[in-house]
Image (cartoon, rainbow, N blue to C red; front, top):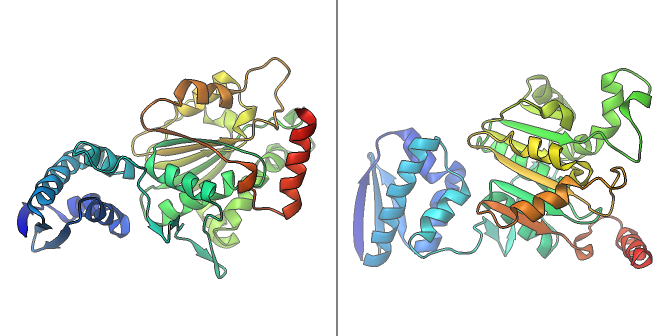
Length: 317
């Protein structure tokens, strides 16, 4: 048994290294099979000699990263461990093989219900940008919003931004009745529905009034830079290539993005390339970008939904 000691300069540094609810600490312990404790301004690492040396180097790397960024992501932990030849697989907090999303609302616990959904949550947690495709009912939006709310409650981010392109079934905002708020509501309603499953109405309204949670059309994202934010783009198949580029470049420091859509429900004019398909093609191989394709087997709505999707796919093929 070997032991090493690192000096901790401040409580903020400890919080950054260990993560919210000690999530980073648990990951490092598991990866290197060591014990890590903090007491009296010192971090002590104990275990096998090689593991202690590796862990000490990882913690020093992460200390430097946290000083530059202010906060560490699961991907930072993954990359630091990978430099020691450890932890090539995506890192996620799991119990019984299924990642839990730490939200309990009205006695209901949010949890992935299929293997594909579990991989999707793992991908969101371990990547700063996740692009997901799949048919209706696979939880693309619901699980992204749940993970965003979890991050907000854990104070890993300061803001959630839910975004949707205002293009549906050939309609145009100008032809809809009412003021701008009334016109936008039908487009943003699915995001609000997902949010209301995580947070009660009064709390959601309060967070929106304080702009901790924003629900906005894609066009309103131009010119913004979002730091410390969890940004979700829903129905991304209805973005153009230019719109997708504009959206992706809104990402600021310490932010995370999830882009989701269903390529089979395209409402763009004929001949216009979908920004979602284009982004997967361009960005799928970039480090830090995760791509997930959910399948019909991941549909968790009414049992008929999976059969309906399959029937349409058979006809189209």
